[in-house]
Image 1 (cartoon, helix red, strand yellow):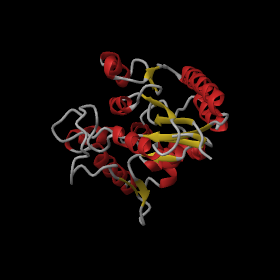
Image 2 (cartoon, helix red, strand yellow):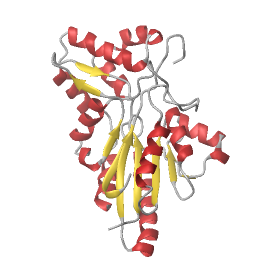
Image 3 (tube, helix red, strand yellow):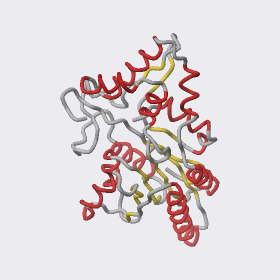
Image 4 (spheres, one colour):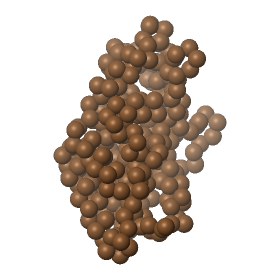
Length: 276
């Protein structure tokens, strides 16, 4: 049965959690000094893979990393908002899934789009870029997009997958420079929720004329919950009045800004998407 619904797409670092998960792990494990020393010489994902190798060689176990991830700061109201949303209808994949599972949120998401991460046969955590930019560029020319991932391309894929269904309303939440491109992919009737006083909010304020979606800012966990659930309630009421059916999907999209050498550095049928 076709159903009109809502697609909620969220960034991960500094949106769902209140920090950068890579920096959090390195800080907690005492590896920030070496990371900062090597940062000007390597792309971010390659450097994180190198740091996992260094930590492994020093005796750090996967269980130690998992314990750190379980302590990652996340506002309780954000946890409740995500669970409520689910009820209505670059980090890396290892970091993201560990944190989401710890808080009972993993099943709320239909898919996670981020940098691949896995534990190899030597029990070492490996981290790679979402897009291998050493072989070819991802094709987006938006200056705010890092070379390892264009979230705008991910949004276009999600939109294409929904094109054969009835019209879906997209709500996109983010904070960083890489969240500007996907914000531009949204149309009339969609919503973008930039975190106030963060890079994407600043870009949207400076380029408001080219952002078609309605802008609803938020600053903290309380506002995250209030604004998101208010929008979902309002959209759901409108859609129920016209169709009598409500479905919603959650997606997550997340990327890590790549630092090149020499440079400064979907819907409520129980689906949520995360972009990192």
